[in-house]
Structures are given as structure tokens and as C-alpha cells.
Length: 223
Image (cartoon, rainbow, N blue to C red; front, top):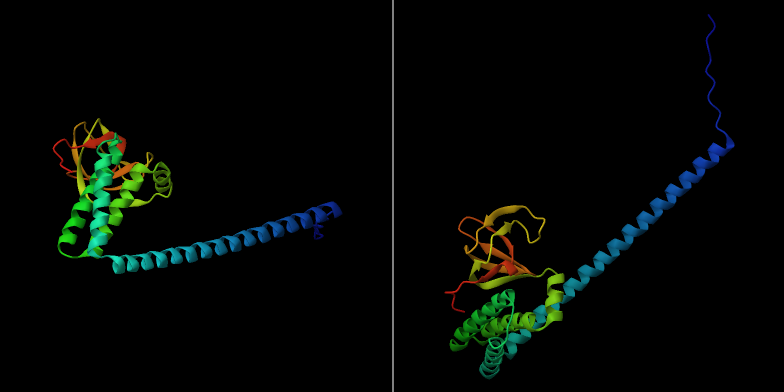
């Protein structure tokens, strides 16, 4: 029985040209991707360098702060912040800003303790933090920038709060995060940090995040 020979299907000139064009296109895409990756690496390196410079500047500022911290300058700084806090008591601010105001008050009180102990650099550190918080309250642009940058603000002293309605305690500070528990109206809790419009709170059994607009200052809390 004769062996049947299967002839290969001939590739037409058009098919061959299409393959070449596709190969050329893919090579171009790969080259563009390589260039994009290289550009991203350069950008990341630039950002890392900028961050290092910011850290260096922060360190230099800290050193300068310690060097310039004297009894008269510290007393003046404390007085300035106390005046600003007194002014805030005369204006209507949101519940979230009231929490920042209480934190600023705690920081000033701590600064005064350091001042009495002649620890002026430590006092100035706390005054600087208090000034930053007051800036977040009074400067809408500063506040907006802080929220967009998602800067976590750890509270110097936890604050007792109460829920204004039933609220969801979430694992992360966003509305799509898993719900850890549902807190009933008038439930008491303690806030220990903020991130934009979110507060990190501690309950009897959980720690999670809630929107600051759903909370109010505990009535028996003395700032």
C-alpha cells in the first residue's frame, strides 16, 4: 500500500506579510512598555529622593527648634496657642473639628507641664503639634490637602465620644471596607486617631473606623 504524503499548506504572501506586521506591532508594544517601566522607575527614584530631602529638612527643623527653644520663646508660643484656642471656643465648628480642638488643648496642657519643668524643647514640640491641629480647623485649604494626602493623625490623648445614631464600625477608613460591628445609638467609644473625615475608635470589643459626622463629644468629657 503506497504511503500517503501530506503536503504542507502553503503560506501565501499576504499571510506572511500579516505575520510580519503583527510581529512588528508586538515588538513596538513591548518597546513602549519597556520605556514606560523605565520612566516609572525614574519617577519612583525621584519621589524617593524628594522624600529623603523632606526627611532631612524635618530633621534640620527639629534641631533648629531644640536650639531656639528658650523660656521666653516657649512662653510666647504657649500664650499664642492659648489665644487661638480661646477664639475657637467663640465660633461654631463641626464635631470633627471639635475633636481636633480637644487634641490641641491636651497638647497645650502637656506643653505647659514641660515648660514648668524647664524642658522647653519638649514643650515646643507639643506646641507645634497643637498649632498644626488649629491650622487644620481654621484653614479649609490646609484641611482639604491633608484629607487628600490621607495623612494619619495619631491623637496625643484618646477622646471619649458617643454615637449620634446606629453606625457601622469598619475595618478600614472607607465605605467599602468590611463591617466589624454595628454600633447602636448613644454607644460610647474612644477615638485615638483620625484620617480625613474618618476616626479610628476603640469599643469594648473592637477597634475600627467610623465617620466623624456620626459621632459627638461625650457630654461629660472635659477638654
